[in-house]
Length: 179
Image (cartoon, rainbow, N blue to C red):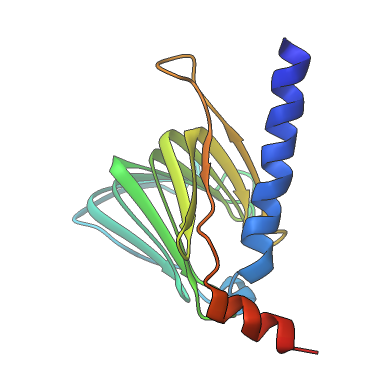
């Protein structure tokens, strides 16, 4: 039974990777831009290299944007290795892709790992691109490698829900004509 579940989870993960990678290349330019933070309150400890921001927190790096009720930053592992932990009801992420589409995500808690350019979404996690989406208790999303791993919960159905929208006939025939 567990093996079947793992095989299905693996299959859904592979499909999800194709879903997002077909249209997605995170604005790689974003990662070369400065990170700006805005909040109503800030508390920073330079020795411990930790900071807390509260009240209408917004992080922006190019087109990458995270908004939350509270944000903690752990910079103890050095520059470029910071971890941003955003919490909210929900915390939200969005980023424009190189093709112009927007990827959005939300969860009770979003961790942005600057070194690996990845997001960990925990608690009522959801990620969307175009009209397709993945929902689960937790989702890991590598923005640069365009990989998604989603996990369900032990509550209710406990399942990961992936939604693929149909391609219109007009759009499909346009794609067939491309060399």
